[in-house]
Image (cartoon, rainbow over the protein chains, first blue to last red):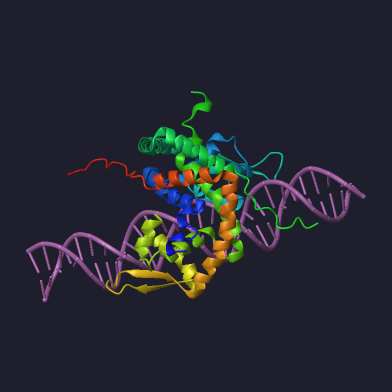
Length: 154
Length: 154
DNA sequence: CGGCGAAAGTGGCATATGCCACTAATTGAA
DNA sequence: TTCAATTAGTGGCATATGCCACTTTCGCCG
């Protein structure tokens, strides 16, 4: 095969996804910059806001992220006073999370900025296209891709 | 408005994209684990491989990533002997990148693993759907979203 | 009731990414 | 030729994410 027919890099779903994520991430980050929040922090704060004082594990599951990663990501937000945690009443292993009043204020502030970016994106990409893209992404995120276990052994 | 009608979090294109990226990233990472490479490193190595001893700036542009981020990401690969850099003949500011023989070997090894994951993904998601998704993601990545400058001042 | 295995987090370590301030090399214009 | 503006990278600093090894709690079973 000629040099041109390698397995095809741009065919990698993951690479393509990450590339787009970097691109879009910068755009939303720029838009949110005035609030001092990164687009990831905004997303996390929003999730906490809509959740009912969610447990860390619940948030991690919803956002499909590693629990420890969530813990790390939460730190700067706690440090800056936007978020606070408290132990679950019935299960001391569980740590619940909620926004502080300042966190709520900051969220409102960020939402303003976010909606501008969101609107601009939808304008450029087409609201319908955007909706389809999100649906496709959600479908991908929820796929059960687990590689079949080599040998179920026994 | 009722609690149910907030601007809609899952409507955030960026958040949805990141969530999917985390999900898919883990899948590809798992698949590539035996090679010792992360999916991101694999993508980067592949890009270097197909490029013609590309300059760092060129790679960064292609992958839509920050130049400094690329530099950081390259370090472990250089440390492990998969990649090496050398100054451009005509412009000493430019640093070109290429795979070492070991890097080529590692790439081949990773490609085997990658194709298994890729195939599995396409099976689950549908090759056609996957192709459409990649096209949509590329379109998003290449959108010119720059926020219109507030005031061109002077 | 004692102990074992599961569940939920934490901390440490490593990579992924960005931004900013700086340095080195070039280029273009006076 | 000389110097200001531009271009390509580097290093430092901070967040984003993951995995792994533990520690603390629970839940359950004998």
